[in-house]
Image 1 (cartoon, rainbow, N blue to C red):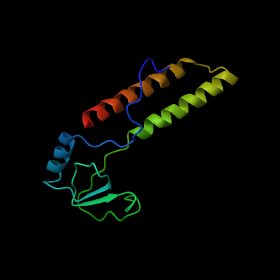
Image 2: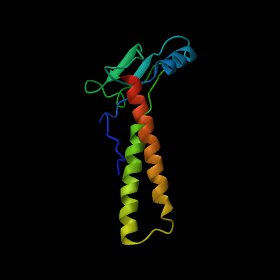
Image 3: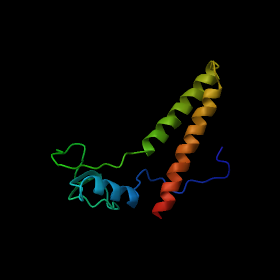
Image 4: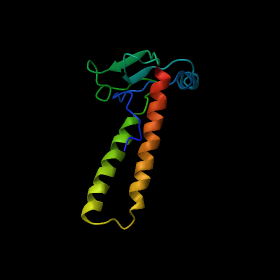
Length: 124
């Protein structure tokens, strides 16, 4: 099932590439006021950064003129894997009308995993 590949990291935390940070900073006129979901490896360097476990940025007030968040792309891969598991189980009990749906979900997972690995390799 792994086709000879191995997982490089169990981390679901990816930093924003510098070119995007630069573009966001330029769009905001030179500075980013708040990064509510920052981490110790962040290169965003917002004026205010909320980091777990000290500050849960989703529970704090966001009264800042410019706010930046790196969207959590790892979440979708997990959701797709759960979908694949359910589809396989359902197909084992009652065949799906279109079993090619399983193949499409597997392809989506592979694309997401490849994207994740590329991001991880760029960070190293």
